[in-house]
Every structure is written in structure tokens, then in C-alpha cells.
Image (cartoon, rainbow, N blue to C red; front, side, top):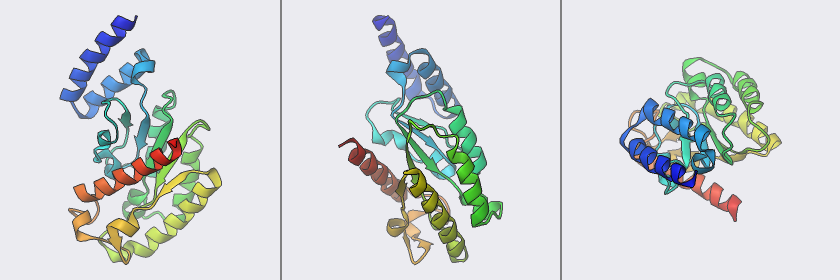
Amino acid sequence: MAIDALVALLVAASVFCLTDGGVRLAIQFALVRRIGFVFTPKLIIVGDSLAAGCPWRKLYRLPFATLNLATGGATIKEIAGQIYRARDIRAPWLLVDGGLNDLLFDSADGEQIESDFSALSRRIGDDRRVIVTLMPYVADPAQTTRINEANRRLLKLCAARRYKVIDLNPVISKDGVRAADMTPDGLHFSGKAEQVWLDAVSSVIRFKNT
């Protein structure tokens, strides 16, 4: 059994490193279910395009330590579906990112975002340690007040549920507007902003483990 697991690990790691996207995700899901004690991730990521594009594998040396279920364009309700998809995977950490699509493209107000996030939280098991990233400011200052209102509500929910919270805005934005070097298009993260996010998540996980 140990030899079979080792062979599977070597083959899977080779294939995993040479593929991406849906193929990579399918391989990882299959391995978690077949040889969970070897391939169970340490961190599951759910969210929208910000999380989908971030190179989370930099957080750990092992290729299977993170499982990124985030997809571009996902709303909070769809992110809840991502959480449900990972319900049988016992990773100790869950990172949640989302809300901008609801706010910017679906015209959701703070009350709706709070309601949807509350429903999302009910998908999370009590055995998960949760990190929630607040919504980052965008380049359009007209959205600042709405983002502040939504984040205020998310903070209240996270405090009630004892979730860890990451607020990137003090670093990647100024006066409620995303800094030019932190975004290529006013919405998504530049490589520099992604590294800020990775460092923040790494700090939370290290702090919890000490």
C-alpha cells in the first residue's frame, strides 16, 4: 500500500505540474478521494477571479498543499457552491474571497451581500479555520462608499463567527482608491498586489500555528 501510494504520488505530481486549470483540479480531487492521507490540502481557496488568478502554490513547497476552487465572475452564492463542493475534504484552513461581482455587476447593496454571506457561512463546517478577505477598493472612487458599507457588514459577521479577517486596502489602496501599481485594469490584482495577499495569508496561518 505504501509503495502504491508513493508511485501514485510521483506520477500524479509529474502530471499535476504539467497541467493547469480544470485538468489540474480534477487530478487533485481524484487524489484526495483515493489517497487522502497523502493529498489532503492544507488550504482550500474559494472566491472570484482575484482568488482564481493568485499563485497560491507559493505558500507551500508541496504541490498539493492548496486547492483553489475559485472561478472568475463568481458571486457570493456561487462561492457558497464552491464550499459545498469541498465539503468532504478536511483541509484545516479555508480562505474566502468575494463580493465585488455582486456589488459591481449585480448592483447588490450591503444588506444583500450580508444576507448572502451569512448563507455562505452556513456551508462552512465547525472544523474549518476560516480566513475572509474583505473586498478591495477598485480604481473607481464612486464605488468606495459601497465597498466600505459591505465590508463593515462582513466584519460584523466575521467577528460573530470568529473568522480571521484580512484587509488589504491599507496596503494596496489610498484614500479609497486602488493604487495604480496594484492593478492592471482597475479591478484585478497585479503581481505586486497578489504578493501582498500571499504575505498576509501566510502571516495569519503562521500566527495560528505558533
